[in-house]
Image (cartoon, rainbow, N blue to C red; front, side):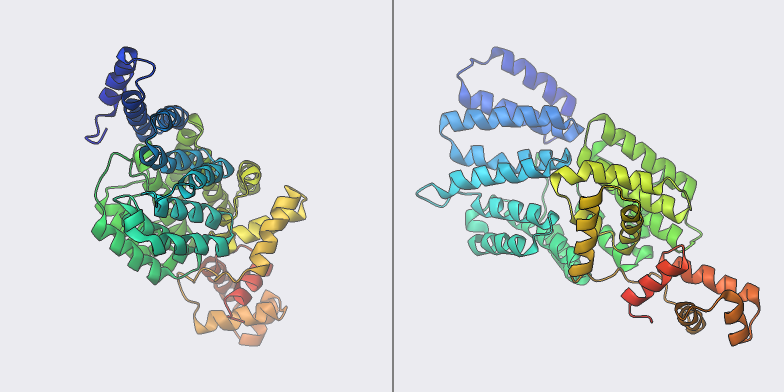
Length: 418
């Protein structure tokens, strides 16, 4: 598995199980756990979960608490990949109960606190998330697995990104990158891609494009589980280019990439990925004036609601809030959508910065739009041609990432522009 020969690992692992005695807990536990990692690397999450859970049971039978609990992270990550957020939380809680009941500090306890904290972050229980991160940091590497610090840095970066502290997120990722070393666990969210996602949120599209070129990622790159997150990040970059009407934007190729990503995730029922991809599809279709944008977002909401996902939507910022408002006005996914919108309204969330700042003239036109003036009235007020006003409007909408006057006013007020 560690060498990347996954098919051989699966073939030999399955053969080994036919020769091992049913009560040989040690070797059956090791083999089934390795098989779980191999299936996970392929994106076969159901098979991965079944094998890893059997491996954990064997280690519990053997009394090897450390090895059994170390499987927690894989099981929870797989469940999260399947979109089963509540199951992932339950897995961590069960392992924490076992670990905290021991008469000694179990190696890996710091990792358990950290992993559970990140799941509470997704449910937007940020106070509880921070509390678990603090517990993990207090215990530190002495109560963590060998790669504890790497994962701790990545989780802290994600929390900083959630809070809009992008430079802090980059600092955490830089530290993680310095400490990272490959293991048998599939590296499904490479640090360079995580860093690129932060740059995209910052509006540093050129820097993110350099990353994509270095990784040789293109919209027509073949999709597989190990590059799925990288291609999702590439899609985010593409959407940012569409928002700015960049010459690098390629809506048709980007649309096709998202379709292929969704098909791949759907085939193996990676619902966690499906939700994120559907949200991106909704944003792109909205930008392109495609009325199916709401249907894409509604599908994402149906998948996400039973598990209580929050940050997956909120971290997309104003573009998703606008679409959620439109869905709410139609009475779709009522309680859940209203909860998400209420969270947008009540929580102090920094709006996404503008990728391209408005000019003085565009700010002047925007102020008059907010005052309720028509295009012709703005033309007369500023002594400019009507077509010039319409041209300013198009640029304002592109820069604010909106499609209508009312959306432009809301977005501008969120950013403190008017």
